[in-house]
Image (tube, rainbow, N blue to C red):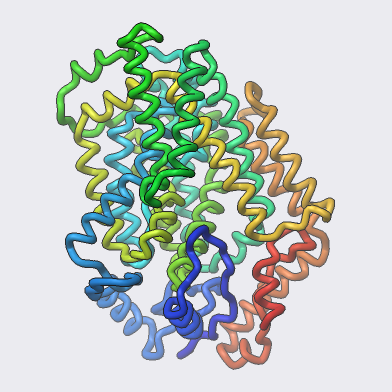
Length: 542
């Protein structure tokens, strides 16, 4: 067939400080009219729809795989453009600073080497750039979704560890590798069949609750670390206050975006001063003085494929899939460029990166909301800028003194920092509900959203064990949310999805004309049946 149906859906994803100007809005509407419906089957394989056949389409895709970025010296820089060399480097370093907080703090919380994780986050971002054809401006950093699962299977406790390194990383590696393989399989399904089936399984009421549950669960361990001693509590309080004050009152938006990193530095410096003056215990700099300045990444092994570790870590793929979908939609809304058609390739890039991380012993990767925030502030949407951030991370990853300094962060300072970080994760999940206008007057939403949150909060020391299958708090709350949603969504929800499947079948059997004859919005996940109302709102307007 020679044509594809026009796209009839758009997304209303709110982002702080991300309202589109008139030019960007016009560009967005023009592109919406040109793009195929990215929720449809095979839209991840665009050459199949080429008017001269799939061979000509494949050749055209390969020739134009990467955009020819046009130089833009001022104003908003779009996906297919690039700023000057000087501004590209400057904005790239700013993106690197934005991701440092999570990419450094999260590996330390799991006992992974921060230099190794930082190095491979840069490599992973380049892989992601290649897989998406240089058309999605997103940075891959350490994923906080797997923290509780990794801690559960390795038994690592940063508060009691004497080396700051997790000795059971190979056990976690096996689970991460299986997670990555499942992720690759899902990415291929999305490339071939579109992404609507993912939304069917994991609408906003589910994904928001899962993400919020992760933050609530992790907050327990952060609080224990921050209150190990009275002095640790004072330092944790100092660090939290520093982060909040910088985030709210810093004169520049760029400083507010890296408030966690700056607050950690403030707490660290104050702790050093207290140690020198005798007001508290001193910071241990023995590792900083003993390590060399430069070294390569640490590769862990041999990899252990433990059934309990696999059953605990692998289910987190559901969280990562939902998280990345939200980020891609946010970038689409922010840049004014429909990007849902790249979702399968974005999943594939992230899955390959996570597989690499599992093989070497680095933390799993995910797209970073922090860098989306930088995009909204700078309005520089060129993926070339993200490449500079990746190269910066690779270079810093070789500086072993940097990793030694990070590992010397005291418990109070680190506990306060992670408490803020996990609070942000919890609020991110709640924000998903707010953005998608979830109706909590519906009792089904109350159950699907509330019960998994309670499970995540109370399962601090226990796991759900069924024979060799083990779920920690995050895994149990994730499965509970998905199962409850499917049980309570009702007959209308299943009927709606069946209608969409039939529409897919008609489209690929009869082509565009039949699709136009049956033209109606793709099945929006209804607010009164537990999920988002934003898409339904768009359909009602049309």
